[in-house]
Length: 239
Ligand code: GLC
Ligand code: MG
Image (tube, rainbow, N blue to C red; front, side):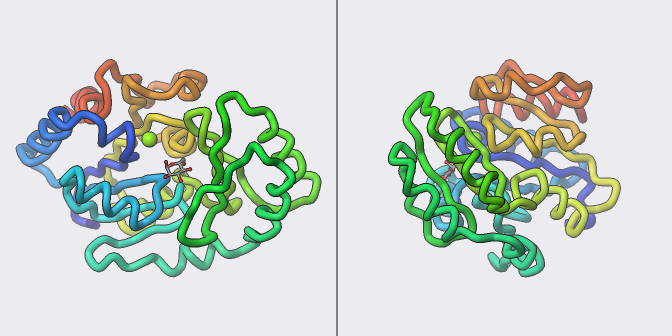
């Protein structure tokens, strides 16, 4: 991956995945380019769920797979987890206290996840109790960050995780130091990576929470949806 001059770091659901014909055209474009592009998938899904989506959609194998909203990083040559990142995620992380505090908020439905790397919930549209829950976590000084996506998913994550921090770590550790990056996303859990300062694209079908991000010369708002928006942005930034 250190030899690849370019990198596409993209969310899966609603960004890379969602329009099969556009997806096909995007990868035809990458195959035709005179340079190699590293592929990094950055998803909210857990590993098994991400792998099953990749199989169902026949996605190319990425160089790196970041799952669980940036709380786990896998090198996909052997699906080996990055142990250093795993160690960092454990610092300060107290999932049992978070679960206990959440039990006072019946509107928060715990997502069924295979482990406690993160604690995630689904909430009814426009539920307000999630704000109260956040206040309790802060008052009790339980280290965390809260990310709300699509007015539905609430992820409580270790403080130093998130897609943006995980992607920064991956670029520093695994990529060429001059790599030309494009970051793509469509919902709340993508905001911290879309605003890292690298060229980035908000696809045309993005969730309303992305309308609020401040404009920036390196932040491109695509007209096209899903993979079509990524291709539109690739032409805009790199040809
Ligand atoms: C994906 C995950 C879900 C998470 C959401 C937002 O849908 O499957 O667990 O809460 O992304 O990050
Ligand atoms: Mg998405």
